[in-house]
Length: 191
Image (cartoon, rainbow, N blue to C red; front, side, top):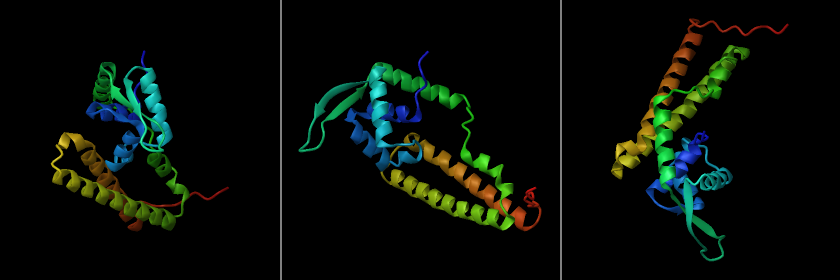
């Protein structure tokens, strides 16, 4: 059985589905498109992913080039097997919910260890960060719309916006409940 494609492997295959390119170009494109907000992207892990995909014959080298005194760069293209693997991974990941164990619910389950005023302060700071990120996504939507990029290419932005707005609103409601004493906040005393 073939290992599932990681989010970064899916991103690499999707980029190569657009056109052949070298790994550094992929990295720059992921950063410029802000896909690094969706997929954890580091140069080392990207190069490792490219090597792994080539070993699985999902991509293949089409040539190498050198520009000036820069290192040699290998250009890759997606293979039919890579296109099929990408399609199958997208299909299965869309239709099958998998709990991913995010950090925030874990820390929320331990927030009672903070004093009430400290918890409220940190919730407010998180809301401020969420508002900044929501604004970045609003700007991204404006950008892609102005360039007339079809919405299926940036569908993830709308998903992230709705998630972040829901979290922000939940936090604001929780702060209101703490401050109104509807949610009693009594950290346990250490024994």
